[in-house]
Image 1: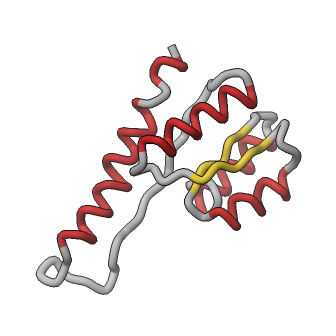
Image 2 (image 1 turned 45 degrees about the horizontal axis):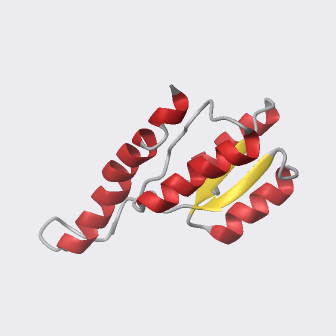
Length: 119
């Protein structure tokens, strides 16, 4: 997401270069704090977005278009590693599915939802 780590650095870079940015993440406090640091809603906005939830992704795209008039760039870096203290023998199906949902399906979802807007 855009609220911390690589995503936060990318948001800061885009804003520094004049982009209007929608920060999408599941870390609400961090996302809202980052937006507060970077400017007003005419420059940067936050939306809660779990990339595994199609409605959240649609809401993020809709916010970008309604607030800023268009969508020029869609950047995704949402990802999780799952349990780092586990081995394949101990890994649960639920944990593996969650990692795949975020890292694979989430990336797919992020880039397929705005396809009509970006044409």
